[in-house]
Amino acid sequence: MRNDTDIAVVSTAYLPSVRRNELSETEMLISVVDEALGKVGLKRSDVGFSCQGSCDYISGGTFSFVPNLDAMGAWPPIHESHVEMDGAWALYEAWVRMQHGDVEIAVALGSGKSSTGDPAEIYPLELDPYYLAPLGPDPVSLAALQARQLIESGKTTERELAEISARSRRDAANNPKQQLRSAETDVDKLLAEPYLRSPLRKSDLPPISDGASCVVMATARRARELVARPAWITGLDHRSEVHNPALRDLTDSPSTRLAAEKAGGVAGVEVAELMAPFTSQEVVLRQALGLADDVVVNPSGGPLTGNPLMATGLVRIAEAAEQILSGGRNRTLAHATSGPLLQQNLVCILEGDV
Image (cartoon, rainbow, N blue to C red; front, side, top):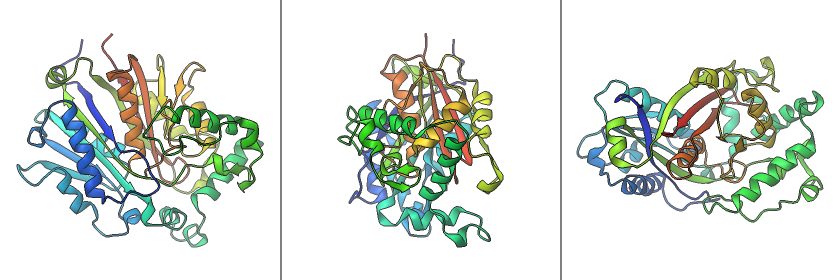
């Protein structure tokens, strides 16, 4: 039985990931908000709180989130907030805000347009400004260092990385919202590709994507009115590690493990949507979480086939929730990450009524 104070995901929406979306971030957000609210017959005036996740560095403009407020509308007034992080953290803030008991419906948003800049130049700005940022190590080079440590420590092989890529691409073929839907899925052919950053090949990397996502949450009373089978958020936690990757064991993710423990553990999880933009990072996350072999990982295709920055983590929550809302699953896990090489990690556990 659920308490009246319990909170559930009742609706989700996200745009197809594309290399370049000609819509503005505001227009993308309007589209997903319309879709998500429309699914459950809600209006913007029904929403008591909204929170957005985006990044000025990616969009290339200061306070770029301000015009995005138009996605929810200026009237009637809605309490709103913003996080300079993935929309998964916007959902976390909205979830915390709902604990006060005066908000019955909340919306979390995530949006990003990587096509407006070069991630290889933008992402080094998140590194230590004195020692690392001046060197300009791009995310692919850092991920290659992590993959090399994994291989040399015996925790993975290049073939396993290729198998992860192939599986993700096969799953993406069934998801019209993923960007890489007709990519190569033969493991041996993937292994024959040249290195981009040894030991990583292009197939080990995510595409550059534009996109937006939206998740609608409701308290128990409203959730039961809106959907037949809500996706209850039974645990939600996020943890952070030291910023400098050189001071961490890159073959492990203790913050992910701790977040999962605090969120209720992985026992009984049937599907895990992991924000692993590189094949090597899926290995780290699976091992850190201790996922059983029968857990289905990223059936949506995952970030390897569609990676709209600042929306990717919220998409993982949306996909995990849909597994319960309409997929018949009983317990799922969603993961989101931020910072260099899995520095900050969020875990959300969702359950259905059995």
